Image (cartoon, rainbow, N blue to C red; front, side, top):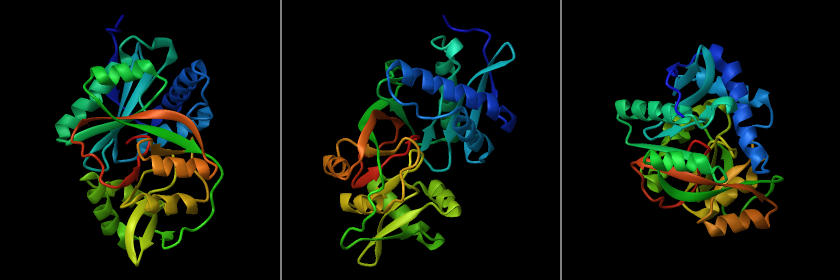
Length: 288
């Protein structure tokens, strides 16, 4: 039964602790029901993720309240032309009552108001209810993605040079992304440059791929699969639950498995609006 008295409002930094707690408990509860490890290993990590989104000017936030009590939140990553949704979380005490749908409709309306050409998200493969919700809202399944984790590979690939990205690489990174996806993700790359997390791969002195990091909340793009192999092989670690490898790139996924990485879970990449079938190799982030 839908909750009628629900109110939605913009999020503020003061909401971080409660929204972070809900984020952790919601994901941990669903994961526990299906015997999977939680995406967020502790409440503190949930709070840190939510706080980062609430305080970043490139994110839109919405908080759901019931009788003055926070019961959920959702976010829209607006750093690049195509926007990414999440994390969307609802307090376990009021799940399956329409709160998630209201939170999703809010960010979809926000994207429409901004004129965003497309909306994307990653959905946990074992969570059938959220998959059904997104399909019902108009999202289309585009790809199955494997979250893989393991020890760093720690080697260089012949013919490929991986180095820290510099501000001067932003244009080249955007060019590679547009070549592969049809749009760039320059806002995210700019953030990664500020944080010192971005890496590029060069072949014959030319940037042929980049990664904002090798982590759950980061993405990577390459002209070819070997470009991504070089970036993955050079990574000192894989942040969070792991990196997200499209299952249809069987060469890359098989290579990851043969180098000691293991599949943690499968996820669905879903979209509304603009979507170009990638012409190259890529790793989505958990947002898209």
